[in-house]
Length: 418
Image (cartoon, rainbow, N blue to C red; front, top):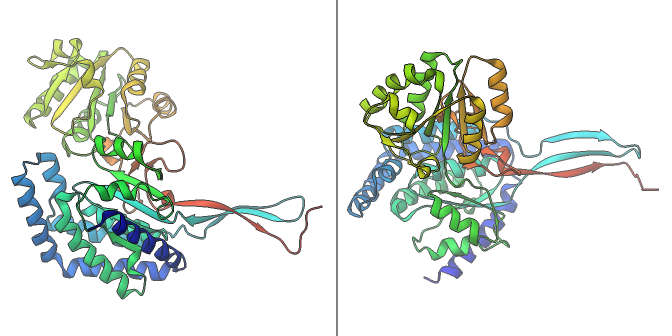
């Protein structure tokens, strides 16, 4: 296979499809989402069978446990795919929405209309359910998409792609509106990210190395986050039960996700009371603890946290703990080491909570809630295309609105400029 020719062909077909899909009304797009959900339900066993082939190959290739966890499709995973499609179908269609329409002194009306981005390339690793999430969001927002999953999930992704194609066909929409790259050759990624004539935006989802490479080499706009170094700060005015539950959930609900807490900050006034309780819960869950000197003074037998620990996304049952003097120190630490993904404060002080929201420079900032809520589905977006820690256009979980932009519109009635 000539990879360059293959990717150019995909790009050309995606561009043509994008000009058709932008014309589709909300009813037709929702019908396609329902048809895709029906196809996934009908082909449930085929999807699990294809995924078993991927899992078998991944185990032989010694993929780590976090990657295997992301790769596996269970019956509950398929339920989630179907539910996600239904959720996206229920969401308001942003395309064509007009806002800020005002009369100008000349008599014209000036406003903004929300429009699709065009063709979106998505590059991701492991999770096959991303194929469904990405396709559904791009479809509902009127975009064509080119999906390039990891080689470890090739069988799963192709089985899902078949369901998507049949669903689009059943709804009378162009099947090229969603294309899943069929080759595992890495050269395909290099071509995809350097085709600005066919691709408008690239969204990478995966490890830091993948995202760094794409950010460095892409000739197309990239929506990204590099890693998820998330913090929970327990303030001295925190409710103790809330603090324990939020901290435990933020770390142990799932280890291999970008919104999992990696560093716990505890006010010095609560360290002696709360850290032993937290340590017992973490250690019973199999979490390795690494702490500052003050943490180690009240939790026996834990390793010392190094400078590297404060800036590491573990994606594993490892947690760094630091005792801080006050909220100023907590915010300073977060703004220095955070990846600007998600950070949370536990406090009963309204004033401190509001200050934390204002001063912590992350794409999701929370009060009295687990960092695990930083997710498109939990935010009511139906699903997410990814998380953005950039500061322009989309920031945080990227849903339908993040996959559109706005253009100015002018309404006149024979008006001329004088």
